[in-house]
Length: 114
Image (cartoon, rainbow, N blue to C red; front, side, top):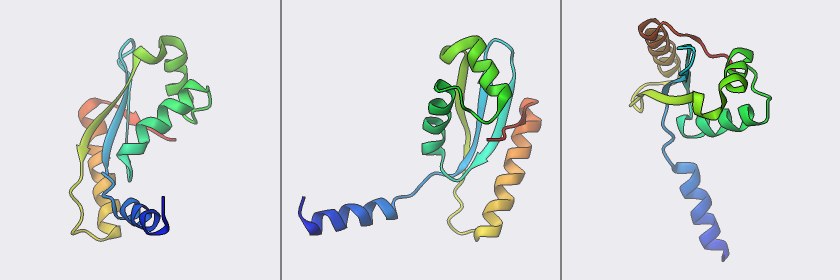
């Protein structure tokens, strides 16, 4: 790859739109659900599964569900994607908190910490 192609690739990577929103982790066997907002929904599932597979996920309840029921028993679900380009940073944070709280209430879920 020549220098210009590399610069273009780096620029494109930095300018890509990263989806923000709210997601849930669910345990099918127990019916438990955990909900939180994320600034990067695309990378969240990968991070979650990697940590769970290696036994090091920070949320002990989710790790216990994974250990007990396996990969097939724990699912990752995107609940809402934000279209927040016109909102400032403070507005984005408020939107994320509000919508995550809404989904926790709607699903009877607990807050996902981790």
